[in-house]
Amino acid sequence: MKTKPLFLYGLGAIALAAGLAWPDSIHGQADGDPAGINGVLVELTAQQTLITENQTKIDEKIAAIGEDLRISRIFAARGGGKAK
Image (cartoon, rainbow, N blue to C red; front, side):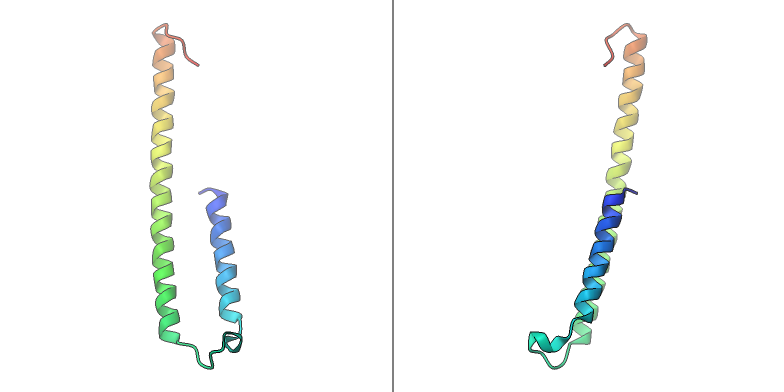
């Protein structure tokens, strides 16, 4: 896995921890809604899982295209064509 998504997940985790640690009184609310917060966290986790799966699929497709390109260059070089 690439370092950029890991960095973004880490940054998101820090932002989430800071958001949860921030006092509610600053927002003018006396009581938080734990069910609402849990719902948002579940939705966020599901979205992160979906993003991770999509990134894996994208990486697999890029690897397959790179392999096809490599094989094409080999065949072009063997056939007397100009390989770049």
